[in-house]
Length: 307
Image (cartoon, rainbow, N blue to C red):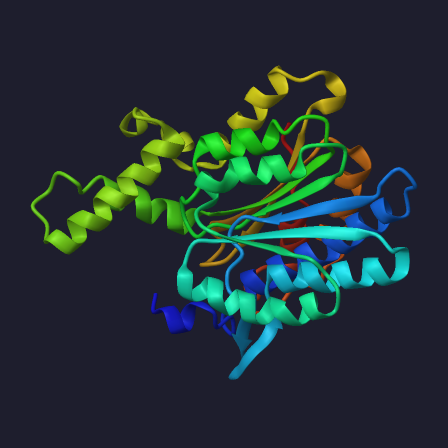
């Protein structure tokens, strides 16, 4: 996809829906915690921050991306509760990182203190852990395009000690399928440019699935099970109160085929109830589910707890 079109979400209702879910839940999460006397500050970690704004309906930079959604909420929480949301934004593309700096700078002038990290989250996760280790709650937004996270990174984030952790993870089936298909072509007689892409995708697959990726079952190739296995492995090592529950939301398009998942993880039963309400009540974009009945639309948005 050309880079100049990637940030145009005119025809990407699933992205608009994802941003709406993030905004609604992050605001609820921050308000509840800010009202607690024991909570002095919170952390929001955006692992694939992007540039900060999207284009829509021919208007440049008209829709806030995840970093600026967080900054707007941080501004409200600071004004109303005098408590801080410490935002950490991680972006590995230099050009995009510079644009993010530009869009974030007005918030710094308003007295907020986001931290921008240039680099790959898989390599920077140790720095993030050092920053957030302690008592303060932390919310991870992990929104890669395809397979761009190592299993080890997610495991390290889940194992941050002694903090209330929540995660919202995007899983795009199409991106994973593309990586997997291209990875299988490594040994074929292909042009050098295609071989390089294939090798890169194979490395991503191996880092996430493991070296035995060719022997995965059809279900395991769906990748969603791998995410949930990571959660299950984590829970096996945790006391009851530290176990994470997982809630899956399917965002369907392409004639009903599940292409886009959001995975919510939290150990807090109330948090899971809040996000379930958000899933049910959020306004469905008519272009996203236009071919489905209202009953089917509601079922798609309710999701379920799997662990």
